[in-house]
Structures are given as structure tokens and as C-alpha cells.
Length: 144
Image 1 (cartoon, rainbow, N blue to C red):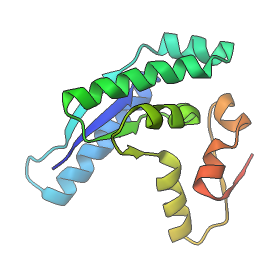
Image 2 (image 1 turned 60 degrees about the vertical axis):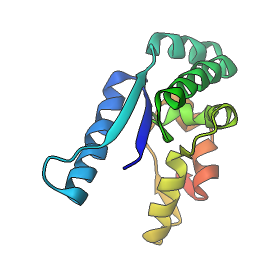
Image 3 (image 1 turned 120 degrees about the vertical axis):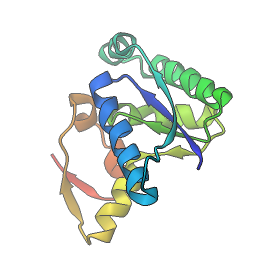
Image 4 (image 1 turned 180 degrees about the horizontal axis):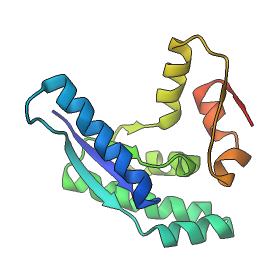
């Protein structure tokens, strides 16, 4: 089993479902008392929110890229970003960390294609809704 590095804390409440669902998936696949091999770096959301409010997305990218590098040094074999909004700067993380990055839009795009959908609805933060980074990456139209 590979070790997944979770970049969380944006907010901590948003991180919980990732941890729970990944572990539930492992338990369902392997049974018994199996659980996922995970490392979690929970950033201080205050720092990220200040960057968002000021439009300092590069600085937010620096914070998350450093966290991803720390997860890599700790033994993670892939990175999951436990928030929708910060996928806006996923390219910064990917450019500074050599680990595979599991982008939410890739998984979303595959699920949309499997169901034969061409237009879907998205609920998100103002930052997510004002940008098209998820719909571009997922390759589908998103209702606003």
C-alpha cells in the first residue's frame, strides 16, 4: 500500500471527509481492520485565507508547495489537496514537488464522463465559482 500525503487544514473541517472516505475505501477493499497509510500536513488556514483575500495566490502556492515537499520528505508517495478552492494553484505544488498529484478535477472529469454528463452543477467558495480552473481541468461545463 502506498502512503498518501494529505494537504489539509483549509479548513480542518474540509479535511475530515478526505481522511474518513479514504479509510472507508481501504476498509471496504481490504476488509478487517485495514486502514490507509496516510501522512497529513494541516496548514494554518488563517495564513491561506489572508493570501486569498489579498489575491496573493503565489504566496499561498509557496505555503502549500513547502508543505507538499515536507510530506515527500516524510515518505508520502502521492499528494492529495483536501480542498476545492486551492486547486487554483495546484500547478505551483506540482511544479515544486516530484510526487504524483491527484487533482480533484481529474477524478471529477472521469466520474462525469463515466455517467455521460456534459454539464454539471458545482457548489463552492466564491474563489472557486469565479474561476474556471476546475471546469477547464475536468473538461466539462459547470453550471453557475
